[in-house]
Length: 344
Image (cartoon, rainbow, N blue to C red):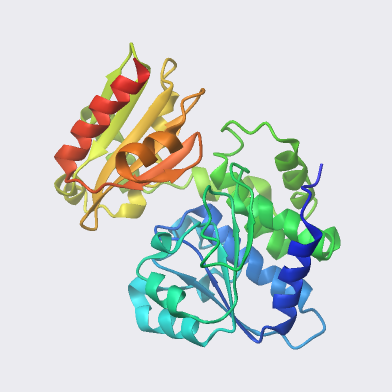
């Protein structure tokens, strides 16, 4: 069943798009497949459908950090500009835009170091997201459906609502399916809403090569990433069988042994839940001078609430994250003590 959207909200989206001549689409730091798929899916839909037959506005796609390598096969991924390599250009595009579209993040802290430029921009700002507590002061027009499978799924339903299913071409479909596939763990996470499968089925009517999307996302580890995974499982995994909790951790020194990068750690938290009796899994990683946590759960444990309470993070009930305000060792101590307390 298609999602129901408020008619007035849809009209506001369309009116903003009608008036725009210079659009900046932006997504979050340490981008995942949903962030990149949202950027590119939105870009292709605007260029090929909404502005079809008209003079298309100048549209730029911006990220705080480079897109992950496994998304490089997506059409037009080479057009994405990231602040890590070109901060001034990203800031200039934000300052010159007459419309900002934010996808897959709920507040400006999630796009640092582009947060100040976004906040300073006087252009209308629209947000499409599936996280809790969107910033409705920063974004004047917000489409937020918390705990939907992905922002890419939400964009699919938005595009269909504005123009219709015929507005989705193969490039748009491939990008949106990439994000859905990534954020659902290839449909392995708890996804009980029929809308997810209806959207996926509609996208697969296009020649997107769904098997290729899956292989590029999940069967595409480098040798280095596999070596890091082996190290984590054999030497940096702690299991608490009675509580059903497992976590893995890697320090900056550990990562340096492999000449590893932050992108080599993407998705490895999911291995903590592959143990039969585990209910909650976590990963703590020290990269780029920060300590970050990722959380996953199988059953009813709310990792979004846990991340928010103990580390000021957030996300979804079964998949969440945080940037720790503590050093690496203190983060491990706080994580272990409080997770065991909550699960007792």
